[in-house]
Image 1 (cartoon, rainbow, N blue to C red):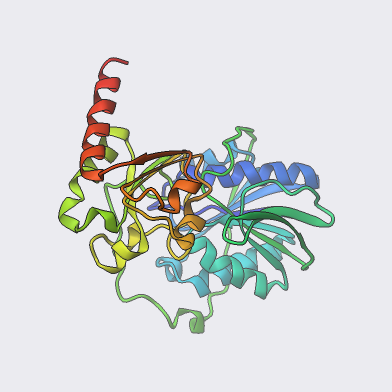
Image 2: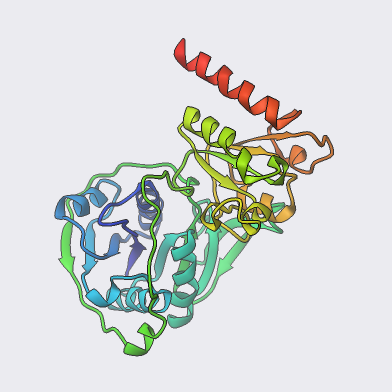
Length: 324
């Protein structure tokens, strides 16, 4: 038995979230007294694959199949499930991002397993497998006992620290059977964002809501983000109004994030939005409405006009950085 981690790569490169997964999974492997195996799909250099060994993986498996060139949830979940069966992996861990959530539930069904999405803490027990996660849109915690034949977990980004545990690793190419029926939903085109800091990877996020009144006012959000070395994101209404692309939508129905710092500008704080961002280490709310629900969840709040507060905050941070 081994712990299997699906480590997603972006154009042949691994990001911080992959190393967080390995760090988390390695601690579980130690508890279970077993080895940690990393699986990736696509063309990745040997040097890049070796980097996975820094965080506990003793074996790295690579699937290189042109049929898997484009991400298709049904196909990827089938491939990962096949590898898990070959290894007799009873614990499978993926990132709690768009692609991870898309494959995790399918893998669980294929292997008659139990699935716990969005975990943030190590399990308190391996046999039985008990893990704590948020419940009621983040308003409470609950301990879940997973009783399936296989345990599938998706780990929230930025929720577990990097722990180096360098090991000598073996790298092996592995093949799986690709069912043509699984390729029926093949995408016609794929557009990738380039030159931008990924929202799920960013340690600081500056987010805007309808309080900004229109897309023409987004410049100050981008300026503050540039000063802080942050990524920009938005609430669902902003994305629905097409002020910003849907890839920037964070919340329960968008990307679930857990940065070190989340700055919400002109966002009232609907429960669906808070459920997707309340794992942030520190939250700052800027709003003219002192009754905005976000103030109850925020660590710091500024009641004021965003069009005055944000530029002033940006200048203050610039001055601080210039003298530090």
